[in-house]
Image (cartoon, rainbow, N blue to C red; front, side):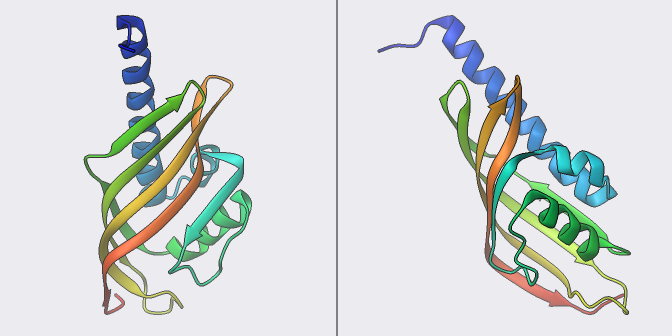
Length: 148
């Protein structure tokens, strides 16, 4: 069945809202805006970051883990040309090719690194706002750098 113009507009608007959501994710991490960062996720967020040493299980643990990891660090995160599929009015999924560089201070227990990979995510629209409900980071390449 062919989509009506109204359905196309709603789908494209949802895709753009999800693109803006992920843009805020990258900005919040790099600028260490942890209140904003926390609001980007559903309360029942599922996290699958194989490289994580703390293995956060909840949204609060994930935000706290990111805060600790990026404390004193300089980071740049980029997401590019996402594939976003709107499943229905309240569910979507996406894949984001990504690049990051994280430079940690010498006293940090975390490694400085750069890398490439993909975020594979699910999104849920709650109260008219899209949020990340599941996030998985899969690396293609990760290079450990000397700490600054």
